[in-house]
Length: 193
Image (tube, rainbow, N blue to C red; front, side):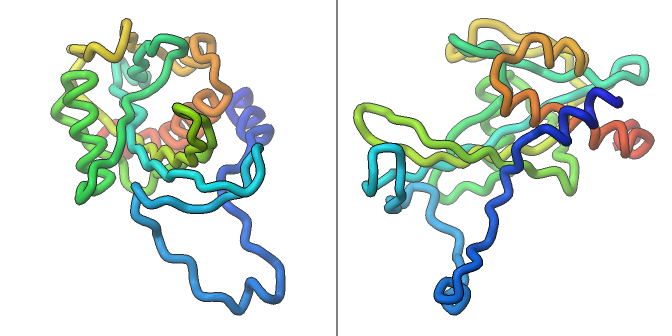
């Protein structure tokens, strides 16, 4: 647990900081954007349009003999979690359940209240700059049987320590550390959930 807390202290916050500019403080309040809306952003290549994409997924876990095991999916270049694009008209929770069914064959997920983390990043696709938010929930299952989709090469149920050793992406290691700490701090509640 000490290692978890140390990793958390060293992690980069994904919470956006408010602007402290006097002019900005008198502007209209920020409203959530349509997940498929285009916005202008300063990116690495200067001022340009960046398409906005929203995806949603879950850190899926289950208990065995009192220990949480996490589902990791092997993508072509990394190990990660169930995740997919939020379709128009779909809620985040609907997306998470649809993606869990499509990518892992899991239909019995129970999203843990009060755990919602967002990763923010930019990338280029076919010459376009994309700004993406990936929202993750923590979700419990009672099912060990996983049926992966064509998008994945393999899957594993792993302990926290095994997950940290498998995952290359720092953002995913930070995410699973937050989830693991949440489970440890709410252990009795998570067992009964």
